Image 1 (tube, one colour):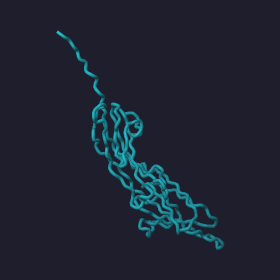
Image 2 (cartoon, helix red, strand yellow):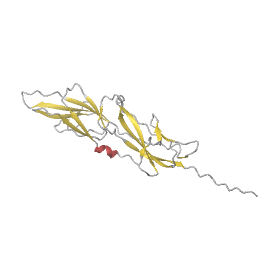
Image 3 (tube, rainbow, N blue to C red):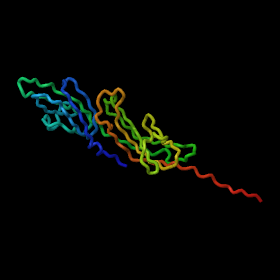
Image 4 (tube, rainbow, N blue to C red):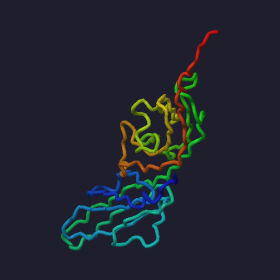
Length: 238
């Protein structure tokens, strides 16, 4: 199963920007490749234009400033400044201050599952679990107070529809994101991992993509073997 990066290209992020001072900039986190829909509040007799600063915070991107609303940002991860510039169309109107917001384009995550510690185990053996370690992911530098990494696992038994791997007694995830399959119900279990960004408790800035920019892994398989039927002993005496 390969990672479906194209998923991110279809994401639409809506941001409603209100008139505010350029001395204060909000920060928004977005998935790599996400589309932006920027809707400034209308102000009578004022014309808007846009500027987008590159990750150096100084250089305008090619084609900016311009009147057309930016709908995408570069796919190079980093912080881009989007400025809404107001121009008064009448001598009796004062133009509002420039509105500046920071958009952090998040790096696309990746996840690889290692081989299970036990490719198979018996339902009644001394070893009744199998651990799968995933590749580690981290949030970008400077976002640790807002974001964290979350792992999840979907498990399909004998080709059935996959379910959350932590439900119905199938297994558990430790603090590092490692998955342990611990079910003792015989069957063939196909395991898929997923990693995404998650808002921390007390989150200050806005993660615009509620999905968290998830990426899935290739699968690993663990077989839980049924206990053999007790042998029948034929007893006779001479």
